Length: 238
Ligand SMILES: C[S@@+](CC[C@H](N)C(=O)[O-])C[C@H]1O[C@@H](n2cnc3c(N)ncnc32)[C@H](O)[C@@H]1O
Image (cartoon, rainbow, N blue to C red; front, side, top):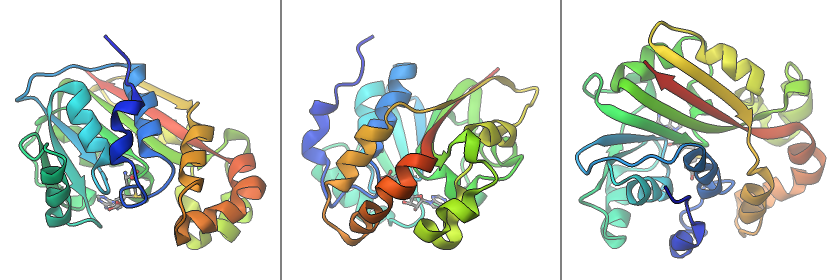
C-alpha cells in the first residue's frame, strides 16, 4: 500500500487551518506506520481535529467515513470548510467534549488524535474508560501528542513553565504515556515512541506569521528543541 504523499494536500495547509506544529506531518508518521484502508461505510474518529485538516487526509487516505470531533471549533465552522473542500459527505463535524462522548459503543474501526489528546486524556484509565468503549474489537488508535523527552520526565514545571505557563503539566514523556494508557484484557498491543517528524512539523509551524507561532519562535532553540518531543502512541485492541 502506498505511503502518504503530503504534497497532495499542500493547498489545504494554511495559516487559517494550522493550529500548531504541522498536524499533517504528525499524521503522516502515524499513517505510514500502519497504512489503513477501509470501506466507505466504516467509521473512523478524528479526536480533537481542530479545523479538520487531519480529518480530510484520513478520509482521503483510508476511504472511511470520518467523524471530525472537536471542542473549540464549532461544527458549523468545520462543516463550511468540508463543503468548500468537497468532502462533506464523507467527513462529518461533531462538537463534543472527549470527557463525555455520546457515540454508540464499538462504533469506530480506528481512532486518530493529533496534538490534542494531551489536553484531556493525561490520567491513568482515561483510554480504557472514555475512549476504548467506542472502538470496535480488533480496532486501532493512533495518537500523536507533544511531550517531554524521557530524560526530563518530572521536570516539566521547571523546564517548560516559562513557555507554557500552567499548561506545562500536559507535557508527559513517552515512558509516562505508556503507564497512562495502561494494560487491559481488551488491549493486544501498546507501542509508544518518540516521533521522527519533530523538525519538519515545527519548522512548518514556525514559518507561519501569527501570535501563537511567533511566541513559540522565541522558545524554540532554548526550550522546545532541547526538552520536548512528539510522542507517538499506537494501541491495538483484541
Ligand atoms: C492545538 S489544537 C490542535 C488541533 C488539530 N488537531 C491540529 O493539530 O491542528 C488542540 C485541539 O484539542 C481540542 N480539544 C481540547 N480539549 C478537548 C476535549 N475535551 N474534547 C475534544 N477536543 C478537545 C481543541 O478543541 C483543539 O482544537
